[in-house]
Length: 140
Image (tube, rainbow, N blue to C red; front, side):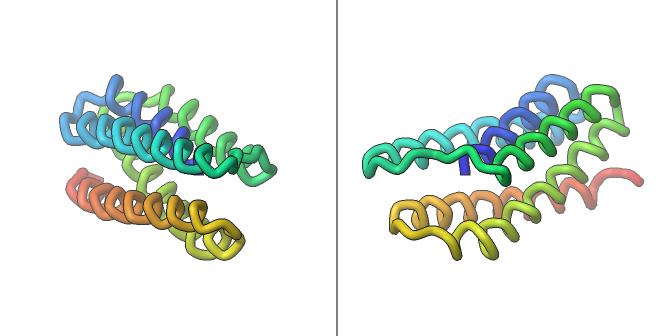
């Protein structure tokens, strides 16, 4: 969970600070604020029941993918940046939904983990819907 949130924060900070499009900046700010809040809530809930976040090959892969996307985005400006960022957000949120639905929830053993995954899923689904709206509004 943590690595999904942290990747969204990292990419959102870049969009918030770099885009010249107010809609993209606002979406980036929303990613930073909402994924930071979700991460803090989940980490606190897991800590209360002594469940530590694990560093796994999957979490390292997700982090590396986000880092590579952030590096590619840093090299872009203007409409090219905005298009690539929002396309990345659609892809990343769809990937996160699939991962939550097909892997993470199925393998979760503790109720608190399942609850936090359900909360994350709601957030990711809402963000995916908004990202798709923005994506449809951008010129090709």
